[in-house]
Image 1: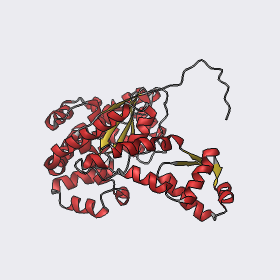
Image 2 (image 1 turned 90 degrees about the horizontal axis):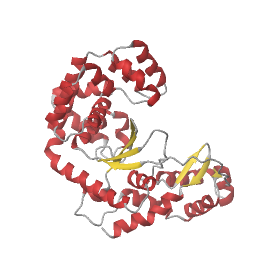
Image 3 (image 1 turned 45 degrees about the vertical axis):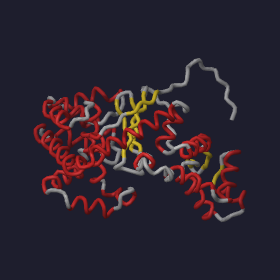
Image 4 (image 1 turned 90 degrees about the vertical axis):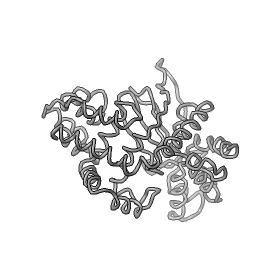
Length: 347
């Protein structure tokens, strides 16, 4: 593709920052245990989650039922970002002391600069503003009901719920292994920061998340990378003022640091995807031009179902993208494979 540049505007970019926090891991754990439709696809089995929930205290079980109904884990995550601390009592005190409209403002989702005034108005009880936020998020899977809930709930009831579920989940699930969690998160951030010395911001995001290509957006100056174990293998994407957030899965080697020989699952998936002649041929064709499924079928002289199967594997390994029936090679992901392999060999 040829491009004639007749603009003086520079391409927007961003800087990458890291945070790790046992409180963020705590809030993400509350999100994970209550996201029952996703349990089949998480690293921990569906049985693990159901058995865990059955063995929690009745008070915590009731609080988690409330979270599952109203998605209040979202409020906890956002509150963790508005008040950075590692100490649970300080965090709970922060919630307790917040003025009502401020707590609701922090709990409502960030929907872009253009919605900030309505977000503020909705947090102060403006019904018209809350309806506008609901309408703006009508295509989201849970934001409309969540926004309506936050705008209407009694502030004392909201505070008591958030404090109870955070305190009880921390006490019953996080605290017994809290030190190990902190050390694991620290190891992962340290390893990613070392990578960042050799990679540009976009490459670092792609490497940390296992293949997400995030290009600069207007009004986003920072990408915040936050390691998490509880939601593996999922990445969770979120927005805050001026920032894009990715809660990315901790790398295998940082979960078991004394095991130098277990490769990261992202690295294994990529090399497995390339360990097949037909898939290598597909990669070769896509390195030359974008192709449709029909075109690849003709080029390889193989059935559509077989080509579709190979493309599924390549896409799962984040080596190929598919949009509107057109497949393209993620050349940056291929370029990073050597760096990932060297990191494993030099561990």
